[in-house]
Length: 234
DNA sequence: GCGACAG
DNA sequence: ATCTTGTCGC
Image (cartoon, rainbow, N blue to C red):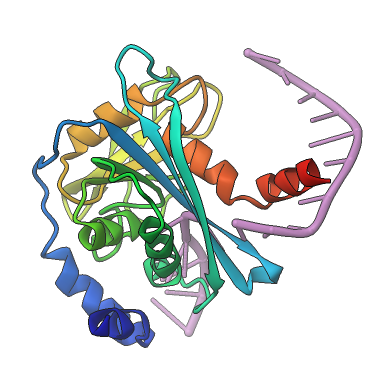
């Protein structure tokens, strides 16, 4: 709890220094248990941004049912927003709430998919990578837009992808997850290679832009779903 | 100094 | 992220 207090109350300069240190602790090889449950995480906001709303959805993995995986548990956790959005420091704004949601979770997933970057980050520690270290679980980042890195044109067919490069290294993949739609940015977070990350994203991909875990977490975290559930209560 | 910039 | 209805296209 002491470490937590210090980790989330840092100045931008201190936060940047911490990211560089933590990035060295990431495991870039596959270290994953047999997958039974996959979690999707996303964050939304309420009260004009004053309240942070973290959503976690757990799906039961089964190759037969994929990509239609049954939801076995879902949790929403709210808490006061502690810091503004600063490009590159997203994890310090979102992870505290995400950890609160995981604390309420009964199921321990073997794989976590996060809305945001994995190592495709200026200091190689995007929100998915940072969360992976905290949870000590394999994580994959799936972002809807680019934060850093360069890439060529992506093919038009579903499943086409090109490497996302930075400093002569492959930090992720720009994936055409659905035709006629902007590609998504996939990058490994913790305990996974890019190849394995792409395999899991494709396995969980329906005919939508986002793979099921983050698509459902996105919906649960959004303001839209919030109002929908309130309407059902009336 | 001038842009770029996850959610 | 969020504010927001209809509308163009596969």
